[in-house]
Length: 251
Image (cartoon, rainbow, N blue to C red; front, side):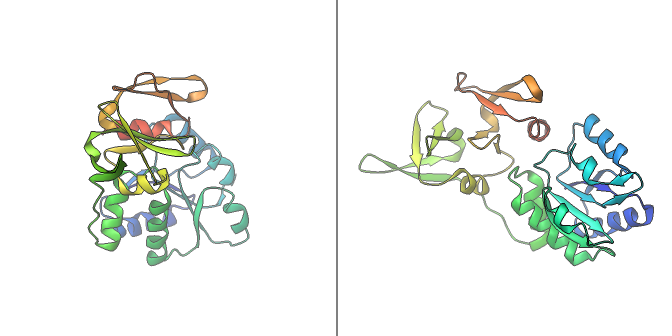
């Protein structure tokens, strides 16, 4: 679990670090910026994005809302503050929870669990965190039973190149070049697949890591994903999701 803590009081930042370690001993604090400027600098220079942002609201150089405009919108934010008058504004951001200081361990634990369940990036950290929070064994789908002619066929997840929507039809494309239509939505499917193997690039595409041949930079910070078996298929990744895609591929 990778965390960015935005906090201008060292004692509060230290306490948050301690609580996070108690929740998940493998937590990694990427940085602890104390101002809007330091936060903006972090997002402009780093390639390793956090899974969650813990953000105080009132910083020495203004409200952290300004700095959070530089953060990818897909990263969930848990606000930690001594004041409750900013709650409505906070939820205009990708806010998961609004915790009042002093931060309670159980409340923070619940907020983090909520953040990972909501996050579509579905990284390995989700599996690890949910295991540590709930002590439950998480099993991912290994096959699909899909309609075919007068019956059904079994499609192994390992044989899938990518899954996408085409005119409201959800299709599983195999490495062999064939495809099947299924009744599940991409939202449902991504929750059932191993996040170490599958990544949702955008609203339309989920890709298998084994099928990606290369990424190419595009205008406005976007990137195009090329698949080994489907070189002509155009899959674009937004500027906000590119850092997460790179991090996923580089493990």
